Length: 160
Picture (cartoon, rainbow, N blue to C red):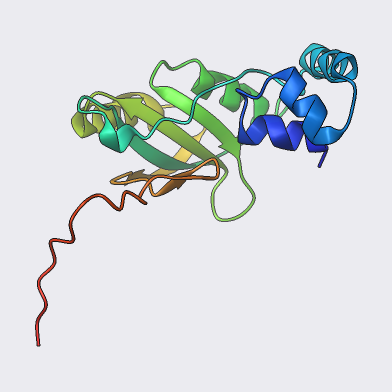
């Protein structure tokens, strides 16, 4: 993997000056390379990795497996475009294995996600079956560990 892309994917807040020093390259080269990656669509955006477990009104999140029947002329693309059009859908991935798509869905409540699956996803013509998995806690996301807060006291009891 390109060292510049690796650095940006680990910490997009790094300045071009910091990256230039880390890669031993001129800053102008780094600026030009980033712009080129953005133009090519290699870099499509920048985001913060949020520990939603620490947010009181965090959305409910579910991973949904979809088995589908691909369309004759458009394969999986038409189905993927339809999935991406739903506001509740955060991520759509085509998979190899026991199911075709892995869809990440976010809503205010688990009930809203259940209704979305029942009323919108499962009723799509191409969908053969769904499997829904609700996310309870995230320990690590995008390489960032969340559950390492050592300031909390261990509330477990010792049983002998």
